[in-house]
Length: 199
Image (cartoon, rainbow, N blue to C red; front, top):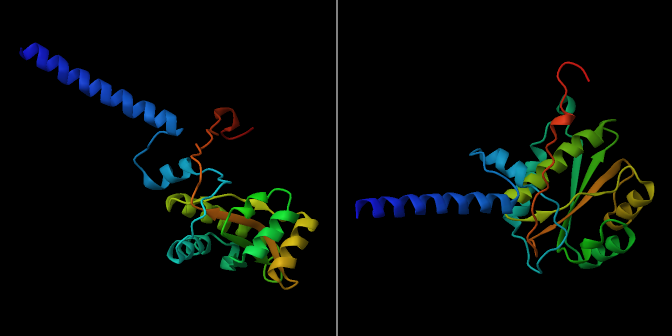
């Protein structure tokens, strides 16, 4: 009887471990036990959203995360335009080639840089954009980076619908919201891309 009980216990433990392992594989990642790293590995581009508003508290956290990015000489040349107006979102979707998902999104953040304050504004703003995307992931939201800079035609579209001053240049538009579909993160790690000391 004891042997049968021990066998059953062992069987249940193995089954639970296999189930957990396959769930992780299905999810597309493995948990490291480090919340920050797990969030980085779980981040994915999400292009379909539920027709559900995002709480202002979550939007504020995304913007705070953006402003926590590193900045050369601590200049912080970034500016952010939160777009919630349906007509503006739809107009940008119609004119921007890779931002058609704006028709579904109820919100977008336009990440911009002040070119008068920094000639490398786009580097600082790229770091801010990544922070926003990671914050969205951690808050249960889906988001995607759609480029404006360095394409002059796309930048003009964004300018038109956000009223940016001449010195404020749009880097990207980030549509975001609650995901309508389940997306798995891509596994991008490639040891062949790593070089020590020299290429």
